Length: 200
Image 1: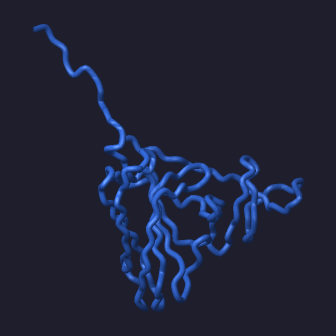
Image 2 (image 1 turned 120 degrees about the vertical axis):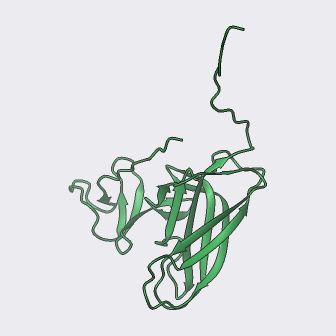
Image 3 (image 1 turned 90 degrees about the horizontal axis):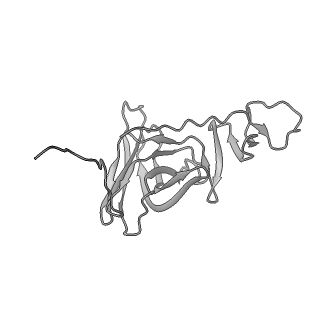
């Protein structure tokens, strides 16, 4: 299967409150900005070094989706387990929320069609690990109402005590595009051709 990559060039941004006559400049501080080509308003968080866009009432960082390293075929009734992992160094954190989503990623953000949440703790770690030392997982049961375009997934973590950030502006967000192949919903015929012809 051919791997397709979407390259998103954000171009120049200007401050929302800035004088329109001023030359455009790269953002240096947190604040609201406007993409001069699309007119879309985005928020830049200087501490996270990320732009955020409003999608479904929640601010989502731009550029968090990645081409999937593989595709998994799922059909109604199947179970899909999604596992997140990360390296952690720091104090004990209790009550972190793991947020798992299946849906459709597009121009205006992520349409969350299925959502699952977990709550988990991490122990104190004083030595930086050489590989991910924290994992969490959620298992979805695929409904009969699944759409053929529900092929994107993402995860994020937030909350906890002490807090690692809130849901709307979390820096811990990662997703895959075209990670799923939806089977068993509509007929699928591929490689249709004349396989041979001969005099008999």
